[in-house]
Length: 248
Image (cartoon, rainbow, N blue to C red; front, side, top):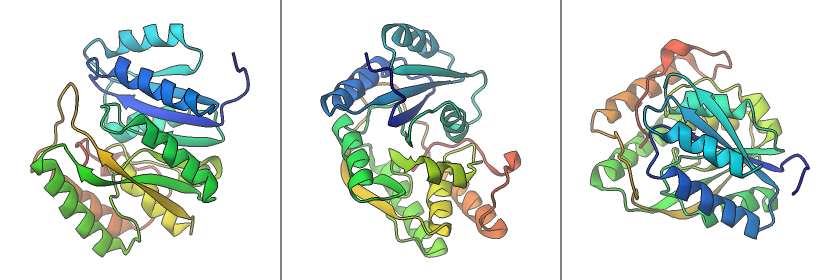
């Protein structure tokens, strides 16, 4: 067993993902170990009301590479990630969803691209999506508006995993409790003139569970964009700014 501090810490917030968590974790572990990456998985029970928490406890007992963080009440995707990142020990820190829609080998590609490209932040860019028309169009509209508003040279703002250097993470002072956390990472990284890499990947359909994306999600994105634009790049936490919608 490798007792060194992990090079890569991957945070995965899980809210009622009992149908996916065991498969997602096992496939990630296999992909990371095949590449001989010294890693830890920080699995966040993000206020789940099903058996997700129990399954995480069982997985942690079986593997020293798993760390479990519990959030008693779900306050959003971003809040789960923020809590997980606080316990991450790696030189490089990343986060991604726990729904199994990203191939584990693509997670490895993002990590290697970060190192080889000497980026401060590297993320996926979903070039093909198999998760339905509504989610595809919501994402397309959001990305167009976001790029036009903030003049960012990055596509697919909400694509994850996002993996960053510890230096980058420590400078970002993340605060968004909802899905706008993805945008916050990109905006603050750009403001700090950090280099950002992207890896094209295919986004698969969910194998289990359900997403809560709705047309109303667009309104939530508009509101977040307006609020962020109004206050500018701010490094102080403001709990009242962010809601709890699903991503584009």
